[in-house]
Image (cartoon, rainbow, N blue to C red):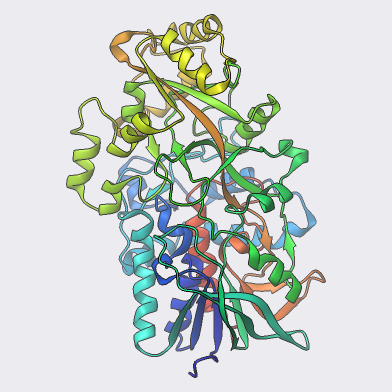
Amino acid sequence: MTNNTADAIVVGAGLAGLAAAAELGDRGKKVIILDQEPEGFLGGQAFWSLGGLFMVNTPEQRRMGIRDSHDLALRDWMGSAQFDREEDTWPRKWAESYIEFAAGEMRPWLHEMGLRWFPVVGWAERGGSYANGHGNSVPRFHITWGTGPGVLEHFIRRVRDHASAGLIQMKYRHQVSHIIMQNGTAKGVSGEVLADDTARRGGKTNRDEVGEFETYAPSVIVTSGGIGGNFELVRQNWPRDRLGEPPQDMVAGVPFHVDGRMIAISEKAGGHVINGDRMWHYTEGVRNWDPIWPAHGIRILPGPSSMWFDARGNRLHPPCLPGFDTLGTLREILKTGYEYSWFVLTQKVIKKEFALSGSEQNPDFTSGSWKEVIRQRILSGSKATAPVEAFKEKGEDFVVANTLTELVNGMNHLGGGLIDEAHLRAQIEARDSQVDNPFSKDAQIMAILAARNYRGDKLIRTAKPHKFLDPSNGPLIAVKLHVLTRKTLGGLQTNLDSQMIGADGQVVPGLFAAGEVAGFGGGGYHGYNALEGTFLGGCIFSGRNAGRSRAVA
């Protein structure tokens, strides 16, 4: 392999790109991986993830008493996706194929590679409506020991083994700006060599051009990620008909380099974006008190007990409950005319139910050490994990108080004086009146009791129902929640071999896409809603498909 020719070029060294390159290397293909960031950013956005994977009917589920199946998972997926467009043909096929993978080969293949999972399976995105609607009927969120870095390390190891064997070249600070096409067929890429940068992983790096390059291969695989770090593109694609106007004040759940620039470049070469208005942003974002990238936000992964209020202190209606229906709740919040909302909770709730999304916010899981998990989550007394307590103490969106009067004063200081204490008190007192019996008419209390029927939630994820206004359960805590950008659900249309499909419905010879830039497969295999654990899973699956594709020269 010469310095600028190969069998395949992979644009983007995130999880999907690494999965594709590893599979290509296994086949003896020569690969060049190009990435605009420094080597220290290897793995891209996946490094920052919690490492959750959507898998079906696993030993971990069965040990927790969970009865799952391919058919139930497919029903949940289709009820959430709600495919309704002519262009959903390939996304639907990708969804069906992923469920086959998640219920079959996925876990044994990853286990053989070296991945392991926390034994308690998480129950994310519960839906809260009808059995044929959105949401997971059962817990399916498998947290990888080592979190995001623990997922990546095995793919990085495979890629580096192939690099040592001379099959893979890694070229960092290479920014692709053009896909070279000849007679409608991909021949390579060109772009700019960027100046070295010593920013810490995830930070904003320079775009200073110090040279140019051209690299040639008969197959170009684009795995460059989504648009969540580019607020301009997020607002441009925002589904105003479904969610209303996009927020002016958002926080970024992904680094600056998640900029979407390869999407337009791929379209210019003949690729075709579908479902660009489908996206996945969270409602439980808080500003990071120790930011790494611009507008850095962290998502709270809540259990079901926090009371959720709009900016004026009105309780949100079910299924707008913590952890139940992300986009439905986003829509309801924006309908109020404000861009933020509030959690109100107690120390008992934050201790048991609050987790923060991200590898760096879960050092115990990231360490892969049971000793650290026990120390952080069991032996900490009344305190939450150290990262959560740090946000409670230092985060600008947290209010901690011993009385409701003090809490409301703090909320009004942050939110502009919109909360009426008497109105808030009446709603909390009504909720508190429902916890004296093992049954209730309050939908949230019913949801809490149902959650505690699952052994995993009762053990580590759902606090025992208690009265918020009882001082012995305090202090009281309020958290101002912002919209946090995250994932692109639509993307470049592809067939099951990850070949790009043009606007004419035909394959674009030599062009491939995988990961978030392809909507995790087909141009949007989630449809309108995600079930969580399907982002990393989709990167692995679509990258693997691209690397195994016989269409790759």
